[in-house]
Length: 253
Image (cartoon, rainbow, N blue to C red; front, side, top):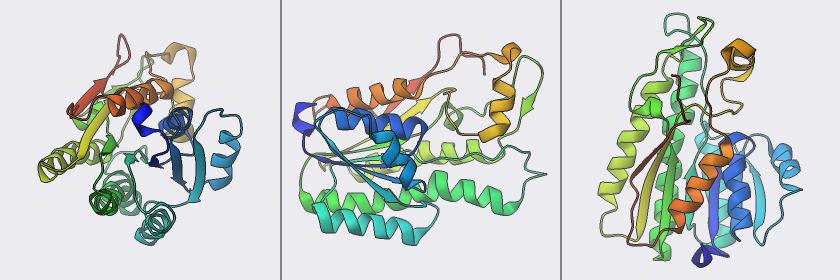
């Protein structure tokens, strides 16, 4: 990771969970991290205890809004001229069946999980190519982007994820598209697909189910994914890890 010290990384969804863990790890490795999330104050508070040679900059950004993304990347361009690493991590899920979901809610999931990823990648690639340097795009995908999960907890409680899995299948596809489009460039693309991770995603609905003693299932920690990011980015430039699936031992779903 020594060659990345002092370089610029942009992490979406950096206020909690996987994005927060990745941002902390990159700071410890000496990178300047621009965190994008709606909760700016939470990002700043979370970073107070992080020790490392890197630096953290919090930018309030709702990635479901095109204007917010453009303003964030304009700031990065004006301040740093380029981006070396982009972590497309922001993601949400709305617990309900398609039949009972509001179209507005499902559209938000699509916008955050897929459209924002495409938009951020588009803006980052332009800066990466203009810089002419080694760069890396990492898309935080999901095992649900390879096989539609049937989520039923041990107590029989079913969790319906409606369009979440289709958006992650789209992440699998766009990662391959970007890999093909960037052949011959200095930009690597990786899709990381974790299994069940203990994070805020799913909100109180998932907490109320998974928090029950009878519903304890194998799960990953956000730090497990951050460790994988550091490993992938740190591999030699001629190595491209296109897809990495990370499952908890004894995965239930």
